Image 1: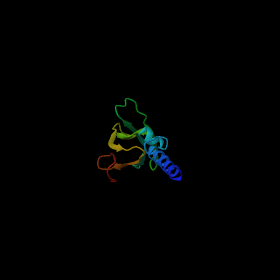
Image 2 (image 1 turned 120 degrees about the vertical axis):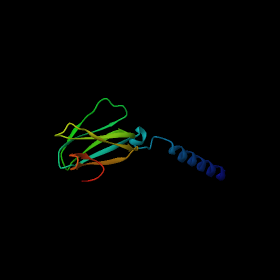
Image 3 (image 1 turned 90 degrees about the horizontal axis):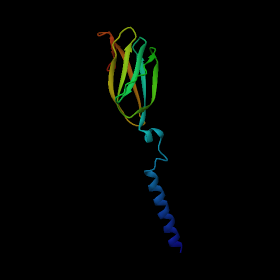
Length: 125
């Protein structure tokens, strides 16, 4: 009887532990919803407008970001995204395409490019 009880307890424990692996009960909301966070930093020495878009978005929610500050976009769907920036004194929007993974905190910094008088995400000029 003891062997049967021990085997039953072990079998139940194995079933419970392996069934939790595929359950969404213990997943973070970002895993369940497949979303991440994008932090856009401004190191341009100018105030800029920034935005983050994905998919075939027709709307945008550009926001002002002062030099030396950052803005955070939460619940951004994982996948290909565009991070936009515009120096306030120009009408030219620049963007960079990035890939956002689920639960990722992607940090992105805009810099000022003196040679083109626009903003640049690739390297500090």
